[in-house]
Length: 77
Image 1 (cartoon, one colour):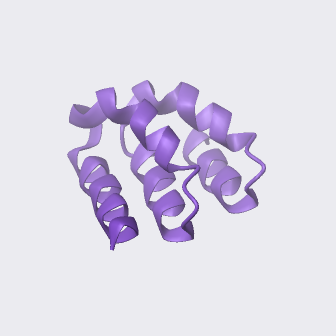
Image 2 (tube, helix red, strand yellow):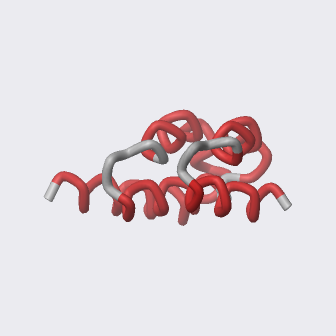
Image 3 (cartoon, rainbow, N blue to C red):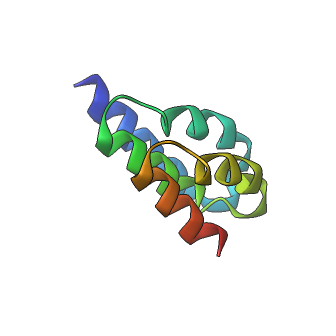
């Protein structure tokens, strides 16, 4: 499904770590996806991108989605 493709893309970017730092805004967009698994994969991937993802994680930490916000806060420390 399209959602699975989005989820796997987010996972792959997360595995690249800091090399995928330029994708932080795209991942932040995916973190607002309608599918739970996509949102979680995206915010988890952001947490693996290093400092470049900090601004996106800070925005997501204030998200109305309690799960996304909690995961973002975990990565922010």
